Image (cartoon, rainbow, N blue to C red):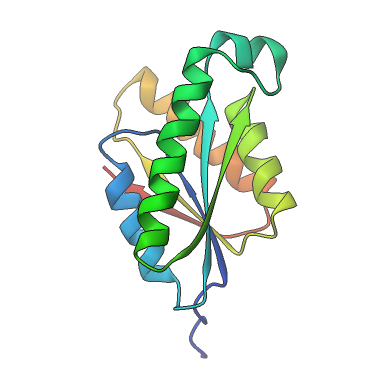
Length: 141
């Protein structure tokens, strides 16, 4: 058996919640000094959902500011990082960004929901893993 080499391009999904730091740290541990990181957040505003494309409503602008702040923090620590904001259906948007960006690994947080929320969020991860070519690392809450 040969070891899996460190990944060159790693995507990280963020929801701007408590789990983000843990997800980012797990992703950074999978990379190497010259790895590139792609931070992804899907805007869930009504305008973005209705247009299934870019929007300039307050929530979208706020999401872009949060994403830019994460990118800047990681760049200040010496990481190669960019951020992408997605719009519309969460699963489809993440899959499109991942596949267009030649990502080698996706790191995503699992929120530890129970009942119906577990079905919804668990189904998101399940659908997503079938739409992308990269392996998926799921970080528990």
